[in-house]
Image 1 (cartoon, helix red, strand yellow):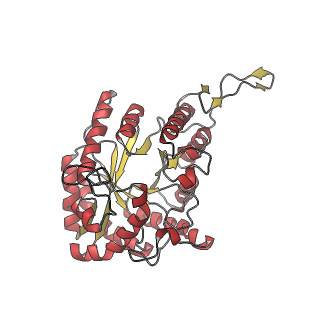
Image 2: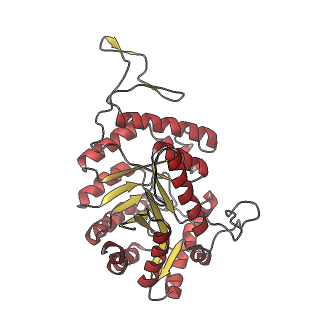
Length: 380
């Protein structure tokens, strides 16, 4: 049963001239003052979420985003600051792009955050997808085989930092410790200082493919799925459950998963559609070229594969796919309960803040959702 409610804010500024007829995504340019406004926005939203009883606020790591869509470069630092501005709200990393980090540095930074916030920071890791970012940091992403190989070694090293009092690691990319003298002896092992207070560390990843599902299950990582069409969502929920069982971890459908959807409340579905359509379209102007259209056609074929649609989706597509929940609270509750009934282990629902909705308008949506939707799930 759904118990906890989350928000995903990828770090967009308050964009103007949005929608399909608005400014082309690649042509957007903003001054540093505008690109920096996301920090105050995040603080305001987190403080409101804290008051209203939401469980967690998630943000995304990205770099060089002069276009203004994803402007948070360091999620651990962001989470530490937001923890100081709130009381109970958890702060999620969706996701630390591990190929752009040294895994020991990330492990140390997370451990410190875990200690000083008493467990309020949630760790998430991903492989990355922006070539402008990952390749500039000297890591591969265009070569997906090399990217996966690097990422998996980084995860192994990071987990050693968390779980072993002392360790060594000698792989293709990392040699820890190196065979060098130190204070009269040759090092054989090292210790991560500090290690997290809360062990084992719950690690989250996005589900991107069948290979990622198998890998996540092997590591007992938790899964996030957002803005997936109904068929794609069902496929990945079942594949994740089955992969976990194969690795000796019995889970109910939806257990250890966060399901995220687009959401807009209004008195009627038609009004909600009209109000959110420009923001929906702005999102896909930016994200569709990266392959983030997770819908299936009537034959079950994933969009972008042979025979299936390869166009930018419309909001009507998203509503039909049940990836976007639009209308009065009663209808949104009904839609969430449909998925809840299908996936008995599902406990977490995430609202995706559509790029283009102004902060004030989104905060009004959070208030309305907390008042008229959340109690249907939290008061039973």
